Length: 238
Image (cartoon, rainbow, N blue to C red):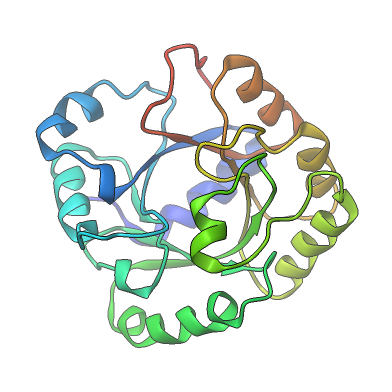
């Protein structure tokens, strides 16, 4: 049983020690209970967290996915919700996302208000997270669903100032996201620039497929990498 009061504490401690972390992201829409056991039993040892969520959950399968995953794994299970309907207190924690790169009030405060009552009553560890969508070279699901545009990878100053604003607003994590299936992951230059100005841990995800991309993101300052369920064996140990 995960002590849910320790998820953020452990992230902070690991980041301070330079101990790199990685999460595998499971999309409930693509989750197969029949294959889950094999998949989870073969996760590499460097995976430290399991994120569950997606831009949509057409089949309302989030709770089922969490229940199944928790029965098979002792890793912390953290919700990465696309909207307020994807919340279940069966998880250990939740990234309480603020899409600070966009200007759609629905994802800056609307969804958060809709989630507030349920979260207030739940035992989930809530981790406020400044979520920054960065252009990954193709339109991603987050862009379509949130009706917001990603920030260009060329506009490093805007990305840095957005991350800094998110920290000043009280967020406890920064999440740099290039989008699922991104052609271009978040560049090391962006990661390094953000790392130089923020003092809270930084998550980086989207389009990280190769050993070189993984190492470049970590060396640039990522504290926690997010990889999809189709991650390759080429990934090296953290």
